[in-house]
Image (cartoon, rainbow, N blue to C red; front, side, top):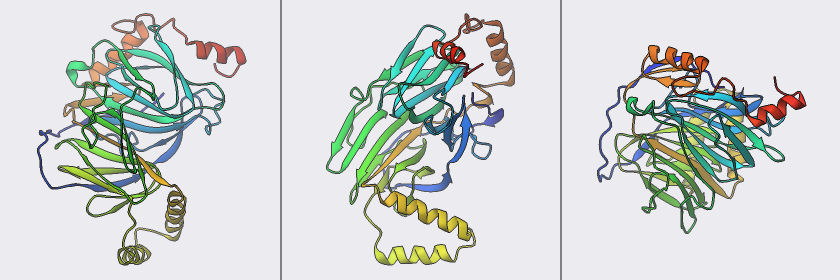
Length: 356
């Protein structure tokens, strides 16, 4: 379903977290690009493009919306994975999941599925019920020692996911630890943090991130300012972070003098043409209309191993990739039964004549 034949070498060396007063700052801002995936599903993608193939340990970040894709509610039918984990976090609607090992279920709004593909999964992800589904899918690489482990699932409903609330701030703790020490229930093979923050206007949060990890902020709604440099965060932009200690996210408005300085600097910038400035101002107007700022704050310890990626497989060597395709074709080494399995979703689509 997702095809990126890319060879990447990871060279980062993670360190342990320690108490410091330096903060994390935004070092790059990448707007999402829109494309079609699966059977006509629209996605906004940041990580996993030719220009941004990975942020070790993260291999892909999509915000998917089957309602807008024109795919007739077909989502991502039967497809394989090996060598990494997929995280599906449903923001709206419902999603049906089935795999060739007999695991199936319905993801409800606000629920999460953390799937370890390990040595092999063939599964189907399709909208369930009326409308369609909107959510986030993140791919997390596995270390060599974990790439061929047995597949596994961790699934939590919206009610079961730990949440912490402070005046004006809500944090849904999918993985890792929130600002106040609230821990997630999900246990990750690759050490990672996945937090969903909702911050009302005129509030600030300081979230610790372990040193040496790779981190990013992905805003969904509203606007905020990040770090001591107060970098503007707008929806569907990937803000890569670097630093130590805590990252500051603030929804307080900038002082008038600073705001005027930025406007003047932007107007004189050679990096933006008139169309870019117009689009940016439209984004700002739409974002400012939201009563709160909502963003995904995600971080992880780099795997720091050689990586070869081809379509649905992520391994350490090209030989392992070739073997993965052979194993899938021959229905062996973890893919037993995959050659004859067809999901119920695909069977129904074929009856309707909407999928072949």
